[in-house]
Image (cartoon, rainbow, N blue to C red; front, side, top):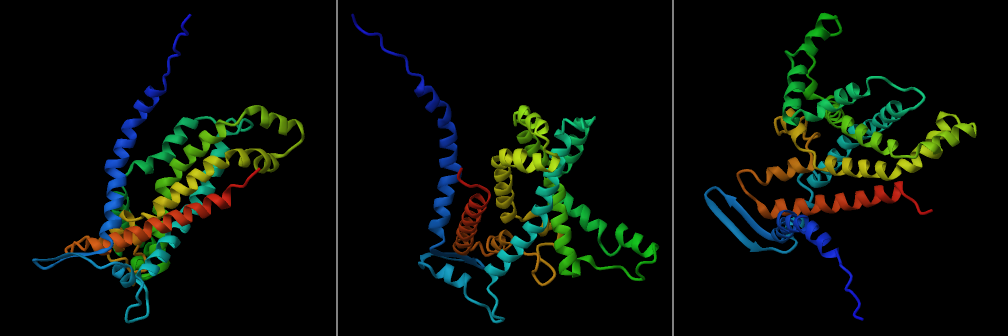
Length: 305
């Protein structure tokens, strides 16, 4: 008797995931490859004259790391600005989101109206970053309501120029990034906590563990995969920070370019000069920084059993 051939459904799985790989290849892999390719060329516009593309090897990268007349290396300075702005916004974002996620998912507290609070904390994420920046610019301008309140309370006789001080500009940018993204992070962490088996919390309670012990011994270890994901995605988003500081400072990165980020620096080469070679080199540097820091975060927050 002939054996009946078993039916294989594996081909349908490959067929279903094929659109993703096609879209990834066309819209992500090919642009990334072209960016790396362009970074080795001199290709820019000077007035009405198009210079290049001419192969220059590593000259674009050497130029980026060459100190200027003041001894400053712009790409390193802007990388430092970007990391400072990310840390100031991301650390409070993750900490407060984690506390809120524990608060809302606590079976002991049984918070009422959770859906309302989830909606409220997520709403800032729905506002465009440019609109959010314009709102803050209006609030904290020299004639804005914040300065009017400060003068009315007698705390200052003259308007405070919030955009002339490095501390206040960085604080405003970090505050906006925090307000826009902590709700999204809270929802993700809540989903992670709700996916933990409730019997583990009950067992910890029966063993006499208090809330802090339960968090560090049960919740945090089992939540770590989601936490690692949120930290890495926040890092990637932070390194690509552009719209908030761009709109808030009018693209100038005031004061003294201390709020200029790497992507703002990249955008300067995509303006009138259309310098695709230098823009490609900066993009590759951002890619390398993102990969190294993401690996560092992953290695730091995970460990083998």
